[in-house]
Length: 136
Image 1: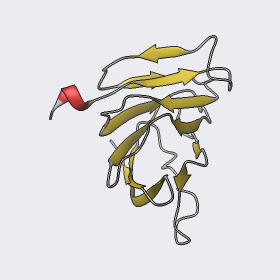
Image 2: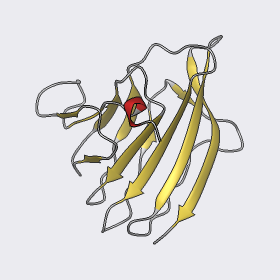
Image 3: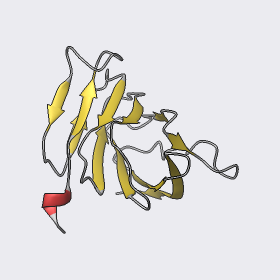
């Protein structure tokens, strides 16, 4: 795995993109605090992001990247030891009618994968894959 392509994922406790947040640069694994309201994906070369959801948090995932045609982004959403974390996605992410909102596996330490491709015409990240249910 090319760890140089891992990126910056930030968890902010205020929705305004500022104070009280935690930035993590070039880490393979990012633990987002349970009270994070928004998780911002900021690294322009990010291909794979690992997000560890702890203490039943319910963050919104957002992205601050200028996309390019065909850009692929895969997120691994890992439940914490308590499980039952939920996520939602900002309007920059678009889901097909067959999957209007992905439902994460609520089991502790479970992993779900979701993949997006940047659609240049709409300037949105379209969900092109979701696989859930990987448990320990």
